[in-house]
Amino acid sequence: MTRAANAVRTVRDLRARVAAWRGAGKSIALVPTMGAIHAGHLSLVALASSKADRVVASLFVNPLQFGPREDFKAYPRDEASDAAKLANAGADLLYAPDASEMYPPGFSTKITVAELTEDLCGAARPNHFDGVATVVAKLLLQCGPDIAIFGDKDYQQLLVIKRLVCDLDIPVKILGGAIVREDDGLALSSRNAYLSPAERKIAPVLYQTICDVAADLAQGRGADDASEAARFKLEAAGFRVAYVAVRNPDTLEPLHGPVKEARVLAAVHLGKTRLIDNVPVPLQAR
Ligand code: AMP
Image (tube, rainbow, N blue to C red; front, top):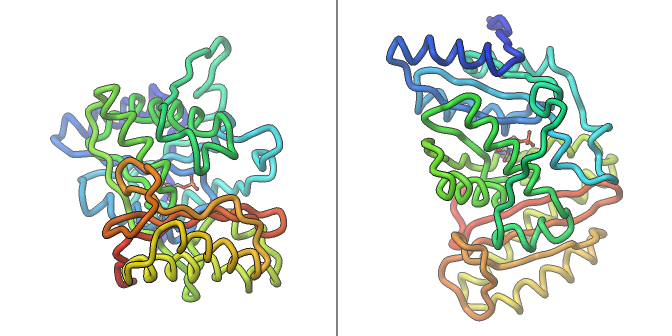
């Protein structure tokens, strides 16, 4: 049965709903999204339901985290369908503020998380992580959840948010949710909708290639050597490679020689679509 969509649009209404739950002794989880809901988002809602009594899903396409030449205008939007999917997956409340509620006239504060944001996706997308950190800090302060859940899919983002919460003493526990993939390994993403049928056939090579890097590292191959081989493979398959990197899984510092524990991260372009993915070293079974 489809659960009725249950939405609030203002900080005031969100806080009233959360306060009523708090008064009844309920714990609260927040799952932030930009909509275009897919099974990856829904897995985070399911995880949230297993960890807290009530789940708030937010839906806000955050203009601050898009660059001037990025897809803010084209980003897929279908609130009614997203609301139904989130409710069916166990979200008790949808928080869908307008941009004017999030950033009223005069808004002038920006949060910058240094170091972690300087390269990988931060290198190609200046201001992106400032936009993410600013909106996530606001969402956490608006909702006041006990836990907030973000996907491992955006691994650098997850670490940035953990750093932000620690540095600003925001009283919330941040959890990462495993990456949900298509059968052929392609990580689900709202942006996969931009892929042409021919590009969609090539796209799973991204996951296969970073898994190969992880397997090579487990066999003792050096990190630089393995990531160079991966770049070559991806370019041969038709991707433009922004980066393939082997990093410390907690600090994202570059690793060079043989490694025991790491994260392999990659960002590529296929036509007009930017795809990112990552896997742990050692690899975990899907
Ligand atoms: P987005 O709507 O793209 O901002 O994503 C909202 C949340 O869903 C973020 O925490 C993402 O990391 C997470 N997410 C996106 N794709 C996936 C996926 N394939 N598996 C798990 N989580 C995901």
